[in-house]
Amino acid sequence: MQKPKMILFDYGQTLVNEKKFDAIKGNEAVLSIATKNPENITAHELQQQVNRVFKESQRIQESNRHEQLLEINCKGFDTYVYESLGLEFDVDMEEVQGKFWDNATLEWAEPTEGIEELLAYLQENNIRTGVISNMMNSSGLLKRRIDTLIPQNWFEFYLASNSYLFRKPHPFIFEMATKKAKLKPEEIWFCGDNLLCDIEGAFNFGMKPVFYPTYIDCEYSVDTKVPYMEIGSWKELIEYIRCGGN
Image (cartoon, rainbow, N blue to C red; front, side):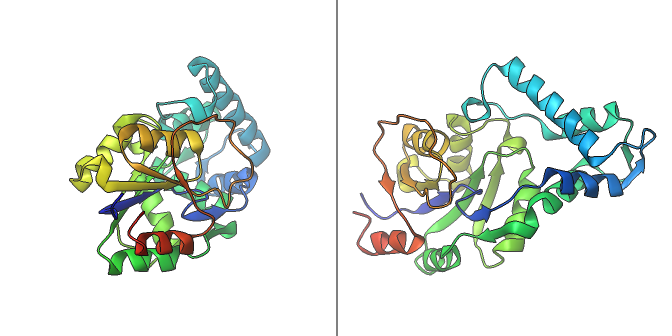
């Protein structure tokens, strides 16, 4: 196995450790910019409606989120939730979504240990980088978040499943990355923390999967039989590449 021409990264718990998710705080921020709230909906009442709509979307798709191959359209999801409660805004829905995400997670989010060193090493050695993430936020919001937390990066593109319809492990989102990179799958490595979405998905498309479970809270119940490299730190990956990727 030769050195990669490009390494792609998952976002959550791979590039960035989001240690806490406070939906109520996010909802409070959203309600603070609402121009109309005729029923005086509280953050907790808003979350009840979010949970209700999300549960129904899961029921219709007849699978849990990690097994889904198509992404929920966040704009449509949020538009339904907010309009069903009579909420109105004078900014576009992406700005509302960004307001929620920043307040729900940004205070507790930090780059994973050693990621800046790894990205600098890859840049110095002409190994290109990009991001593929399963998330209901847009690629634009994903880029904004990464640029905020890891300002020294050289990512060529940011593929959020919300913007590209397909979720990992569906091959189409990996295919989109190869189209943007103008590379063959075997020339790309993929680093992620999810055995199904990241490891099986990348391997089945022909990329070399690198499993990085350092920041995951629990083991995903996936009995994967695909071969992969497991690392415990980004320094370990640097040393692996220095040794020729073997």
